[in-house]
Length: 220
Image (cartoon, rainbow, N blue to C red):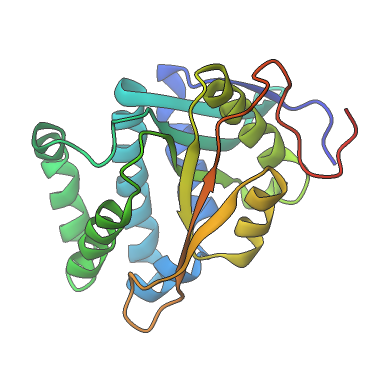
């Protein structure tokens, strides 16, 4: 367990580094393995996908990073209440990135875009802080980095007295979120043909915003 993890907002100079961390973190994700079977093409698609997400969230939400010394080890991409799904104008700004994804993996492009459309269609109508993506570098996983990132973002939602929402197809990730007070509102969301089902999870606004979010069983 790492004890010297520092969480802060993403500096512009480290956007590429943050994108690369997310791409590595999601490279073995069962959804993206199903959508883009070729590892090299998958890496290209994920870098572009998360470059777009990070760029958008810096304007319409928050991007938190976890560092140990100079090493950037984790990233959480949040969109503020009412900022997801994207407006038509924001979608237009993603076109160059989408074209880059099409060139990188032409056979997978339609499936990747359908995944995004499905997530947007299933998003709860209630305004909430939406955790679009959270990833930890594979070299630092299961060492408490994700806990620190998540607690930081949830504290921001609590200060605003807003709920938090997300979706995941990874049971281990769902277990982490549930320890922080998320409950599954849907467990059978089918967004990828022959792929794993997604869960939609929601955490209500905190009754006491002054109390820092902690995982279940953690000492105060």
